[in-house]
Amino acid sequence: MTLSENGDLWCDIRTSHPAGNNPALFLDRDGTLIELVDYLSDPAAVVLIGSVLGDIWQANKDGHAVVIVTNQSGIGRGYYGWDDFHAVQARLYDLLASEDVVIDATYACPHPPPDAGGPAHSLYRKPAPGMLIRAADDLNLDLSRSRILGDSVSDLAAGKAAGLPLGILVSDGYGARDAEAARVLADERFEVIGR
Image 1: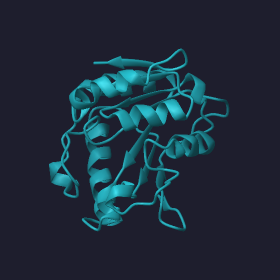
Image 2: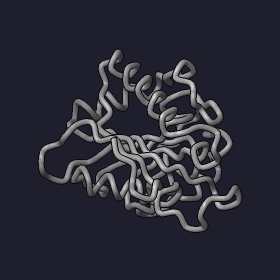
Image 3: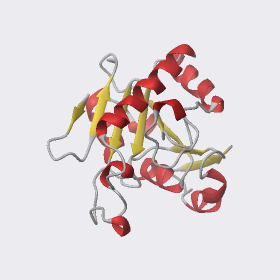
Image 4: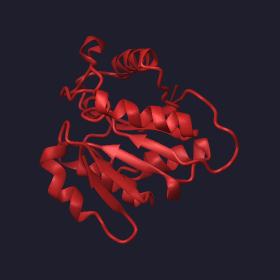
């Protein structure tokens, strides 16, 4: 695990992929992979959302990288720290291992939104595509053959901005609330699917 020098990006690359431009399955964490808990800092509160496990399993089987990209504004707001985040991640990795699925990397941005004291232009906070682009550079990924699963319009907007062709909005977390806004993102280069 590494934290960038200025503290604006945490990355944990857990596996290596063969050279070549591999596609990836990008996943939001809270509300997509695990049940939504505001400002989650307690590992005991981590509960997997079973509906995405099949997506991860299939991506693992197909040799696609599986990458978590998550906004963690609770860190930037001072509600919890990187140690708490790491403990939650460790619990998540343990639960996923018990389901026989593998996460290749996790990227986390601590910036709150601008209206909550965050920077006006964060490179990494979704809907900016920085975490996806950084993952593509680190893991040699082909963004043009990748997809993102998320529960919010900002997840899918990050995917679109990174050049992904597909965004899948899950109904968990904020998915029901953001369904209409997510559909507006669709165009000839970016497909939006709800489920």
